[in-house]
Length: 262
Ligand SMILES: NC(=O)c1ccc[n+]([C@@H]2O[C@H](COP(=O)([O-])OP(=O)(O)OC[C@H]3O[C@@H](n4cnc5c(N)ncnc54)[C@H](OP(=O)(O)O)[C@@H]3O)[C@@H](O)[C@H]2O)c1
Image 1 (spheres, rainbow, N blue to C red):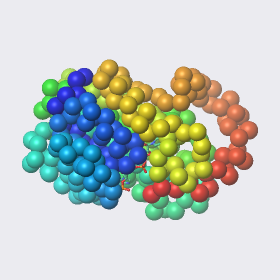
Image 2: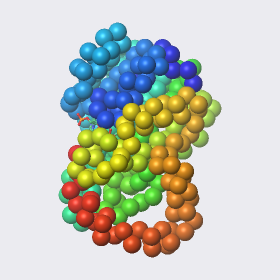
Image 3: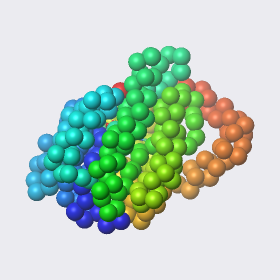
């Protein structure tokens, strides 16, 4: 897929992995980029760095259906159509399952999964006007292998995986390219409260993800070949994976207690 002169919508495109995705699409020659987040914190910096790019910032909340409808209406009015939707915005609340507040459970599902699905639904009429329509969903390694203390987050990310495969198969007659990205721990604000070290850089994750999109790949799994092997092993032998995770139980419990970015 050639990215020159493409019109791209990136949720959460002003921070973390999303911001790096924005920069790479600009470097690859995208002509129009729309970014949606609640605060648009990083938008002014992006505008300063790339004054010649048509950067449209729309404030909105992925958990508010009306905001998603307004976003697409604004893109329709300004651009008429677009080529690439990136469902990147995400939130996380980890720790003991029963201790996660009801609000965090509902919000994680709304932002990470329901919002991404509804935004895709509203985007399709505009995307399908493109000669090369594409959707990129940012899942997580936890969408491939469910880990203790990340049950709700993992459920939203596994949901994105199945949504991606189903959507691509349903819209195959329209040549809709759907790619799902599975980052492992990546050094962004989302991970500040996790205490993790030695993380992937968001720039690398974004660069490799866009390269995979250009090559027409369906999945990109970070964390090396071993992560892909682990995912297959997890499906074939879940009881053996249980045993291996049980050995790290106390460490996992301790390290996830304060991990929250909502
Ligand atoms: N970092 C990791 O280790 C990692 C690993 C695997 C997968 N991922 C996934 O990668 C994606 C990007 O994460 P990141 O690490 O780059 O996180 P980040 O730096 O915290 O950025 C998240 C972005 O999403 C936006 N956002 C959050 N809630 C929103 C809402 N309700 N409505 C609209 N926008 C919202 C944020 O802006 P506002 O706060 O202003 O709304 C921000 O722009 C997420 O889907 C995440 O689950 C991350």
